[in-house]
Length: 93
Figure 1 (spheres, rainbow, N blue to C red):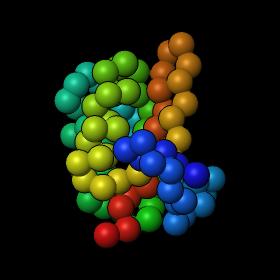
Figure 2: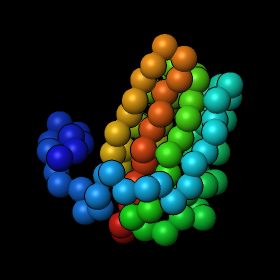
Figure 3: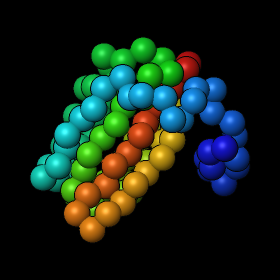
Figure 4: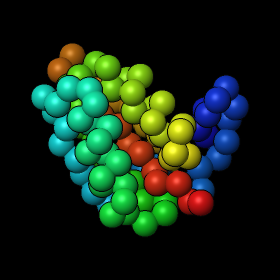
């Protein structure tokens, strides 16, 4: 289940599916990770998953906000001491 805007919903795509693309946005600062994500999403089909590697802590706010604005779902976020990994599903609409 995914939590979106305080509500839980079921993803229509398996969140453990292999990503269609991987984006390396390490060492990029705001707004570049979001700009690169936006460019990659244009190349994906609805339901595809984009795996994004980031190092800018600001992406923890920027990427979820951008996803909400465009209707994409964050399936998972993994954080370590050195990087953040997002799994983003392109909206089905």
